[in-house]
Length: 136
Image (cartoon, rainbow, N blue to C red; front, side):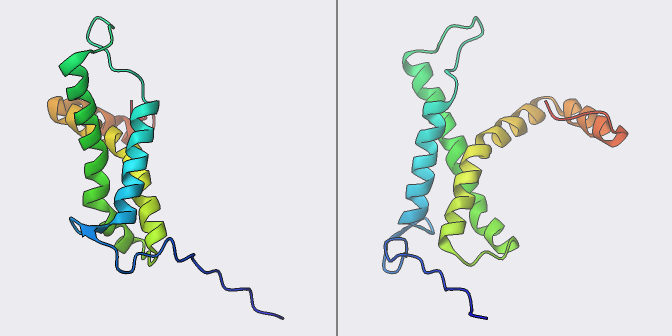
């Protein structure tokens, strides 16, 4: 039998000699930035309590908060998850970061909601324990 051909990563993807910012290289920040733009462009417009779209400073503030909520999870958790999963490739590490951007804002919003109403978390845990519930 012939051995399977070795797959090599193109030189464009390698990060040898690239600058790092806050402990992450350029490819990480590029992946996170692209995922953030995709997330912000495809997300539903935020409305006020009456259902009207936000405008001006309120909209800018909401976009900034969404951006931070999308960037912080991959910034804080990518390396830890890569170590837990024993990932050795920067490409896979960047894919983990993109995944964290996509689900990170939802996780942050859920954590804020739970911190404002902790009895909701207790109710959710009890429903799951009893076998009849899921997260809302």
